[in-house]
Length: 438
Ligand SMILES: NC(=O)c1ccc[n+]([C@@H]2O[C@H](COP(=O)([O-])OP(=O)(O)OC[C@H]3O[C@@H](n4cnc5c(N)ncnc54)[C@H](O)[C@@H]3O)[C@@H](O)[C@H]2O)c1
Image (spheres, rainbow, N blue to C red):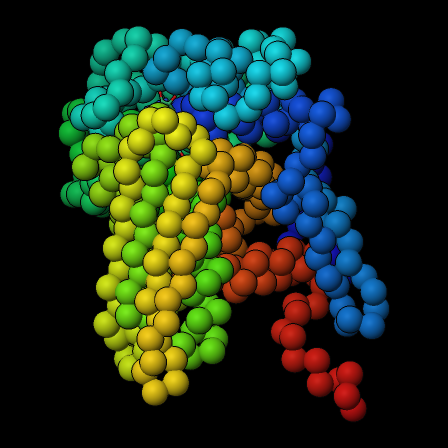
């Protein structure tokens, strides 16, 4: 029996997916969709496509696919449009990103070439290492926002999508905290009209999305909607928000290992994480301002998982350091090292070394798909504001001010699946299970 309180509108018609930034992640996502549609690859890593959800007792044997349990848009029904500061179409951008192999890209050339980026809203003060020609002509920040709203209207008219969602896959912007101009919607709108220097391009896209009735998710670590003005707008318009920073590689590993160490009450003295990567993202993160955004988002997971206030003997003095080194020969094939200094019984020291040879965009693309489909589901279910149940996907999950963010990936997954059960009026799973032994 569906939950009487949660009415979910059906996923009828096409879903528009608007993406600021068409680099490595976006092109791997788009090419992946085209490959999946043609049976040239499988959506590995995607919970919405491959995951199941257990319902009821373990004796009932009910574990439907998530995509059959909740009404989600189909991969075939997605219509994509992007913005980028470079003019390359999706095929050219994918070739430059160098993530997917040429034979696959060549077989997808036609649909990829059809995706040409719209002119971007860009300000080099926020991404110092980049500059490109495909940008909107000058004016106030409000003019830029109106330009993006016009792009959204044109896209919706052209493609006849019935719903639209936006997800940021653009470069990481320089670290900025919320300022006076972000404190209310009224101040923010005045700031847009008066060109307030604290308003970033990503905030202009997010504002335009929300004003157009479009949910917004942030895949990068910088602050976009984590401030009162845009939270207020999302609430007023009953729109979901989610972010920030895809939890794809090293931090994903960290949030797997740290809860395990804590579960066994093993202490941690230090955790040193370093990465080499050579893609455009790495180049942008080579700038100290953009790196700061990443450093802040990567650092918080450990602190929250280990809860030093509850376990001062074990985690009261953890030295946590995160480094990212731009190293062009590696391209998108990032390598991450973690050295973890732990201690056990009577304080005896031990070490763990993790060497993750990953592919950044291969890990991120399925997260983009899941986030887009779940944000659309959330909107159809009338869920507004921060979607904490999507924390599973993010390094620095957005959360209500009165609670700390949940970083433990296993708790995040349980929360996500319980939210789906709740939407469909199924019992939440507590893992108590005493009834099996009565
Ligand atoms: N696993 C991952 O790959 C991963 C994980 C977490 C977060 N991220 C974040 O996702 C984002 C995308 O990563 P990527 O590897 O695709 O980077 P990328 O450098 O390949 O692509 C980013 C694109 O955004 C464009 N861009 C920059 N500012 C823009 C603007 N204002 N409007 C429109 N386009 C703009 C750039 O020109 C570039 O093409 C980055 O912020 C990255 O930090 C990626």
